[in-house]
Amino acid sequence: MAEQELVFTESELEEIEKIKAKFPTAKAATLQVLWVAQRKFGHVKPEVQVLVADTLGLPHSHVHGVASFYTQYYKEEMGKYVLDVCTCLTCQICGGYEILDHLEKKLGIERGDTTEDGMFSLKEVECLGACGYAPMLQVSNEMYVNNLTPEKVDDLIDSLRAGNMPEFESMAMPQHKKRNAG
Amino acid sequence: MSKDWRSYEPLLIPDIPNLHKIDVYEQNGGYSALRNVLNDQDTWSRENVVNEVKEANIRGRGGAGFNAGLKWSFMPKPDGGPRYLACNGDESEPGTFKDRAIFEYNPHIFIEGAIIAAYAMTVDTIYVYLRGEYIAWVRMLQEAIDAAYEKGYLGKNILGKKGIDIDMHVAYGAGAYICGEETSMLESLEGKRGYPRIKPPFPAQKGLWGRPTTINNIETLSNVPLVINNGAEWYKNIGAETHPGPILYGISGHVNKPGVYELPSGVPVMDLINEVAGGIRGGKKFKALIPGGSSTPVLRADQLEDVTMDADSLRTAGSMMGTAGMVVMDEDTDMVDVLWRISHFYRHESCGQCTPCRDGTGWLEKVLLKIRNGEGEIKDLDLLLDITTMMEGRTICALADAAAWPVRHTINRFRDEFEARCKKSVHAIA
Image 1: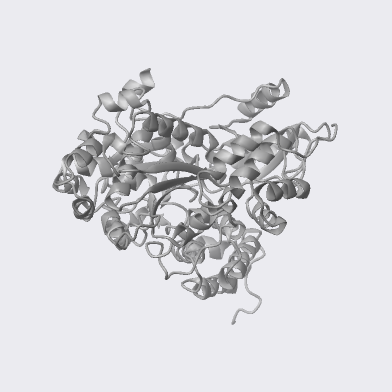
Image 2: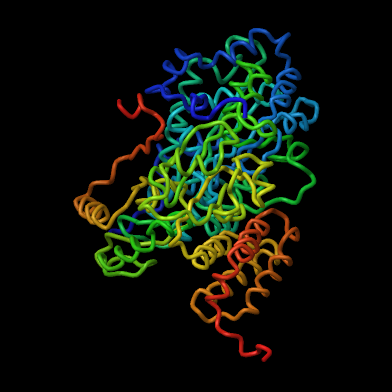
């Protein structure tokens, strides 16, 4: 991959100004601007943290402290798709580990690793708040994929390889007859 | 309970297609509570709104179960400076997945409730904090907020009323369970690491940026329009007497129909499992329940006869209501494995500020791993119980308690299973 120049574009700087306007201090925008940076660069490695700090006029140490505290920020380069497999409590008792094992075999990597072609990173994560739809995983901090089976996982991998992100799956409230009919 | 739960019609998330759209919400009576309050500020003075909500006894749905109106009344008198309402949509207690249903299906009932709360407490800025993983729901909520601004329910001179200026902003985290702890959430909103703060000072005195702040759960605030529209007396007649109102039950685990169900408080636990959620899947036997998220003590099936889902009944049974995130476990569930995984979670999520929690959660996980792998001894069970007493009540926030309770109660309630996994002690007395 060609080295990407570490700068924010005009439109990104505008977005950052809008974020800053929500809060009385620039510091408060730290988490949200780290997100802007991660969406652009795919990670928030130390040089990206410096860019965020300088853009907000904050000490580098502060931004590093925040980036290192929160697990969703990638402190290293990850695969094109990051698969966060939940194995916590309900997902554990409903087969989350079986899904994780299946993915390890399928992708030929262990949890925590990235495939050689740079396509997939596999992670074991804590509860994602989808317990009714266990086991489940999240793709690249975006969409949830619910009620997983090995077959559903295989289909997901195929469609990601083809470049298709999963669509949002609305998990209906079982009580709702009218809504569920529509 | 005054009425059978079977005839209950959902109020927080009624079965109306496209209710997330502001026009549909309005057509179904939405924003009438806010309208009534602002159009008749003599009847609905700020103080009267607080009193009505206090009287309704909406108990916080984030886990603590504290009377929301009473919490509002702790806000000091306005001094002209900024005042905040911070809405907690972090929802990261394992077993909990209810607030996202509000963001998805009826975001405006929450927005309306939050605006009424802000009016009642003379708050000028509302922050809604969601967990970063909920990015899809962040976007849905933002759309709803944008629509509310367009209709004049947010912003300057709300509904044309001079001087009623309330803004609402969404912020989101980036993966940290601790940010659901209220003061940690304030730190995160200020753009920092999510380290819980020492109380006092309480957030009502010194919250966001040192200013008066109230923190309420998303579901809690969603109850407010119901109270304003129908009155506290009506509200108190829904469900359990000491814990009234609708509840979003999140039922997960080994049931046939897991999901979020809206029913009154106080529904018998066994009805929720067997009727509402369709019973234990695969025809297996029911073994245990975690009633309100991972920190609430597990109950054995034989402890649940006649227990209802409300704070009092669950306390008597030996647990807590928590977030009403019910994790149902069948007879094949390995309690040693479950407890190890819960302890792994708390070790992972301890922020590391306080030694009893930072070290204690690590000890709990390691000793449980040893037992799980068949390397433990009976004395390790007592060691675990010892560690819990050295953690509980000795830290800044309740994460240490949340980690300690499941260990203590799961061992006590399934002691035979834990002993069976231990090696015969070489120190045993002949």
